[in-house]
Length: 239
Ligand SMILES: [Fe+2]
Ligand SMILES: [Fe+2]
Image (tube, rainbow, N blue to C red; front, side):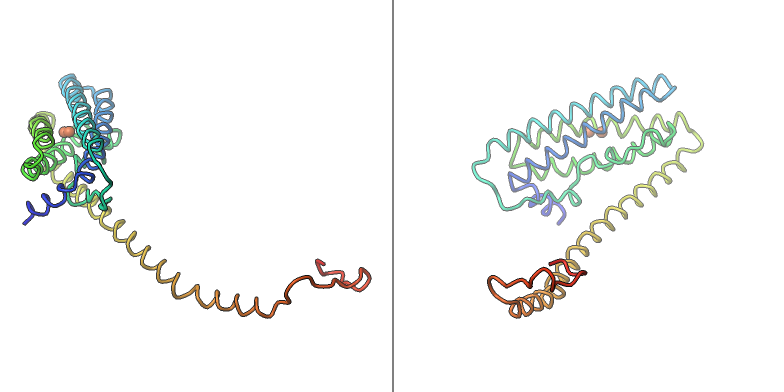
């Protein structure tokens, strides 16, 4: 069922191109955060791994950008589906939420491990959903190999730097991801509610004012109106 939904989401070529370009931005942004993480850590092994990881994310950004741009250029007309539906089929979403300064090495590794695991799961689904577009499917296959490596090295390093606390840190990171998912859903619902309430206000509250304005307009004299001489005008009046 979910596979069918993903196939439908990726079927529209314009949506496919736009999603790839959005994914490229997330990957590039994550790459920059990982460079910062490499600068901040005092652990030489982590510094090396974060640098390799950052280069991987930059390469993913390049792959998504190139394929997205090629798809966009090959389009003959514009489609009627502007929505990317990234809340159903996201990119490497966890990289969006990286807070490199606020986390310890172990906390960052736990968060990265869960994000990479989720991304690997999503990208494996997209490889299959995009079977009819082999070049795009192959982009996801290439990226998936790296995501699996990211998922594995982050867990191995987490177990090394926090051997006793690693499961606790993973649970903490899981709860933090859950909270962020709730916030994303709540702000989406608030957006829909805001649109509905403002539309209702427009159609229910504005018409009486429009009618009142029309009624007042009818009572106004038409054309030029004689102005009383200077000495008969009230002092507090503007005219
Ligand atoms: Fe990536
Ligand atoms: Fe990754």
